[in-house]
Figure 1 (cartoon, helix red, strand yellow):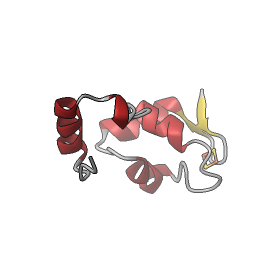
Figure 2: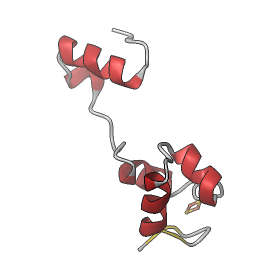
Figure 3: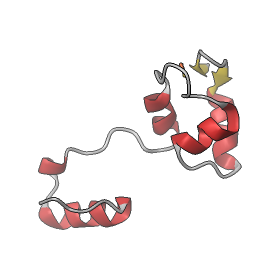
Length: 78
Ligand code: FES
């Protein structure tokens, strides 16, 4: 199944690049250009990389939010 129709990149190709070490959509883009034209496939690529929709921050308990913040490396705004 195609993930990126602009460049004809399949799910299998994205998964292979991930297995070869690509951890982010940017690294996938470097490997095969997927996501660098219209950008419509970036969310799908994120999902394939296991970085789908983030949980809504306001729904996270303070302790879980701190863990999530530490995991993402983002500053905790709360
Ligand atoms: S569908 Fe991937 S860049 Fe357009």
